[in-house]
Image (cartoon, rainbow, N blue to C red):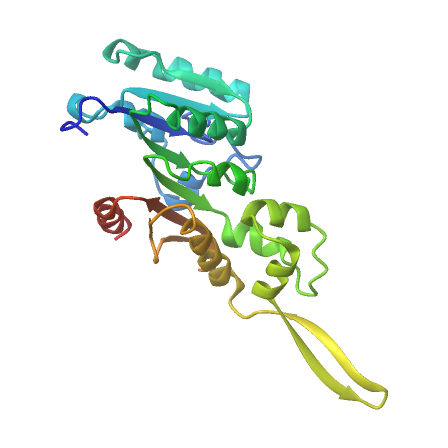
Length: 263
């Protein structure tokens, strides 16, 4: 981007949190604690937002948008990041509200007539708050995106074994596909002959978590040209996949870099 000074760069963090350890979940254990259980409490922990603000001046973004649905968390984050503001030309934007709404605003801005923006979007919800429509709104924009997909920890649990799908609307919104397609992707019908005729049994597919990740990757490919085929997989203590961290871009070189990061 340094070779294109007429472009302004944007960093957009959709679920930014407080920037502190142990603040975001009921059990007082963040994903950081799960990944680094032996980390000392004396470590100067830096969340994604703070790390971005400590980039070398030549690498720094022009605009920073920090979004969270918890106003108290945003207040704590601001108090932590205020010390970095003097080094940046534009004021940091702290937005209290729904990430989906803010993504739509970002997409509209990037599609404006004076479109000279390039954005890095970082989305790491702990659940399924993200709607497909807000992701799709970024189509045809100069945007790279990292998304933490709750494949095993949430989505797989909503795909019940019997295919009753009590949370169907949430699944449709998350994937951006119909009930028919969801059933086609995740369920099979087996026919068994009995004394009273054929008995049909609905069965969930094998390795559903992998299937969830692959489907989300295919959905992202409808918006971006290049998507990581092998995302970063995060496991729980029983070695079960709980999250897939996926990258998407319209730039082939960006994908190459993302693959190296994942390695």
